[in-house]
Length: 454
Ligand SMILES: Nc1ncnc2c1ncn2[C@@H]1O[C@H](COP(=O)(O)OP(=O)(O)OP(=O)(O)O)[C@@H](O)[C@H]1O
Ligand SMILES: [Mg+2]
Image (cartoon, rainbow, N blue to C red):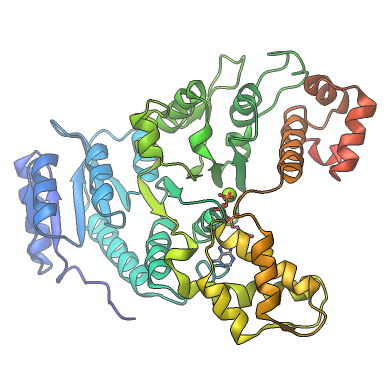
């Protein structure tokens, strides 16, 4: 351990409460433990203190005049996503506790406060922050290969947020590894044994996307012959990955915002809402702040989704990662294709290091794959790398591949929505059964696998 977690005695604590008696009581308790906490009487003052000196932990009241505890929590995490915050509430409703959990609170306690309960929560939050800060080799993100400081720092932040329920927005260019990072965050979280449900918001037409996400009632639109629970409910307990969130249509953005505010979904055509318990991680290759300015993305949703923003750097901003990743991709590829192990010649490595990588890691994977498959011997030469590099037009995938990907995603969503009922799915897609079956065969999809998925 490099950075031991502070004990209560050494911890810099900030207490935020608009009730002076409460502040004094907490100060007394902590002083008895040997600590010297600072206090703030409201959210605004707390943020001023935070800007001056970084405490180790914040304890805040929920209901306060001006800025309430939830708003303060998100403001704190906007400044420092990993600051442990304990929230105390007099009138705790389940909804507030859920919201606080999603905003990444370390503990949520109700008044009247028990001294021992508070001290236990404090100790646990401090221990967690210290331990998480210090462990470098805990297997987190073990599938992500890197050597750069840029990635090390990013993964440190990701590791810390994986253990809380805060929403995470991953930005970065195409092929940089956004989805890989989203999965690592899921696997590093307490939700790891539940599902990681991934939806590509740009590949599915608006009406289908709505019902795919939030579900629908039987007969709510033509083709909806059965009810469908929707992925938010299916992901219960797990993580929902909203890929290409920047492409979500505005009308759906408002509906998504409501879900994130209330932690409930209302299926299309239903009058009833259902509670959902998911952690939302989203990704985009677009500049969302810009999309907000241009009126294409809701500002309130942007803030909801990006409690913790993480940016995946482009491969050419971290050139020291190129060769470790290339070696890794090469050896796993050879295993997968049952080829004898191949190696990159030193000159080939130099070439990889200096090449432009507009398609990032995905493009690197393509180049490596092409070289591995075409090479007859065990050494991949610079010449082969050069050829492979010149044949890949950057990040653009061939139109046929793009069409094929779209068609497959589309079929999957239609099958999910209809629970694998081929005749309904075919109707929804505007195809006859025979054609639809042909499409399923082409994409090696089995309708039966979608039965019971509703
Ligand atoms: N650091 C890394 N180490 C090993 N493999 C990686 C790394 N980064 C990315 N990859 C691999 O590169 C490919 C592209 O990554 P991924 O799909 O996560 O990118 P993305 O940012 O989601 O791309 P897109 O914007 O196109 O959706 C995947 O096969 C992934 O496993
Ligand atoms: Mg992706």
